[in-house]
Length: 379
Image 1 (cartoon, helix red, strand yellow):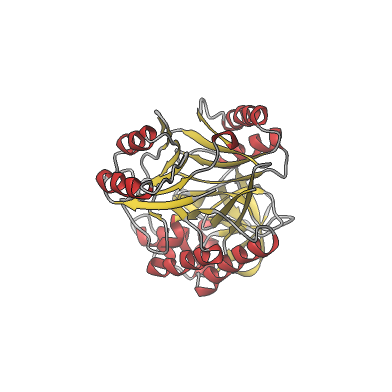
Image 2 (cartoon, helix red, strand yellow; image 1 turned 90 degrees about the vertical axis):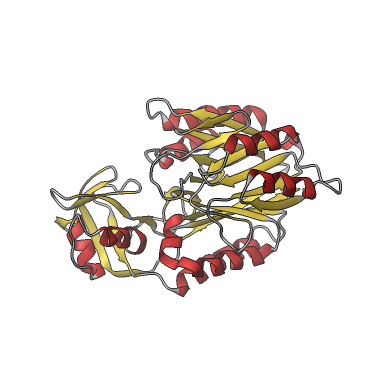
């Protein structure tokens, strides 16, 4: 499988870059497209569609094809994979039927291929990524390879989109189904945030609404451990700091902890809503503010993936949380460069609102503040 990455700030730049990439007989059949909501999605899709490519697309909070991250642009991974090795399936979520929708996609996928892997993107901040993954596993098995992210909108927190040829949705899923007997898929979700203090117990919660931890209001105990001050609705900086740097670390029976940052505060009782489910009675730890070690752990995790599972790759796809950019700023480029150098093959990536994948030794989960790296190799 040959792969090339292109990027641009305008539709004209993308058309020019595409023509240049295809000038020497390169004929891609698949385009993985990450772009800003400010871009003309339909125009970009028309260019790719006219060139005979199937499209897997998502809007972002930033995009990249190398260590130089962009905003407001388009980043595309072009692949010349055989058309009989993959399918693109899309669906709208109706009445929040996340699991049933992904189950229906998995059923279609299993009719296409005996052994399947999934690359997926979902839109709408309310989408329950865990339910989506559970639906895929119910049909394709617990060990299925499934990786992806939640679409972004340049951190506007308004409308996000996923799209394909002649289709787009602000509350749906686009899924690239790969025949794993023909294409190897290996991935890892890595966070790197260090924990501090002893385990605490979530004493009251409902879904992703965390009321109390060790019988203290969730906001109060979290900000106390983080040393944050001026905890008022008017202090927006504190809420951003809470989400980006002091996530709860939800402990799991196996695998690494899963990040659950507080995103919305209920000031009436100082509870907060997190990015995913935090069951009542579960154990959590608080986080230290991130440092260079956080990025180094991600790169080391990707290197281990190469050493243990996929020594060679044809292309990389990366879903990285927008919260990491808020925490690291320009230093984020060092993490992306480290990932790229592991295989040194064409890559594309996006900054997402959530990440979907499996941590080392863990279950398929919806993550935050995490980088999910996926390597592809035609057999």
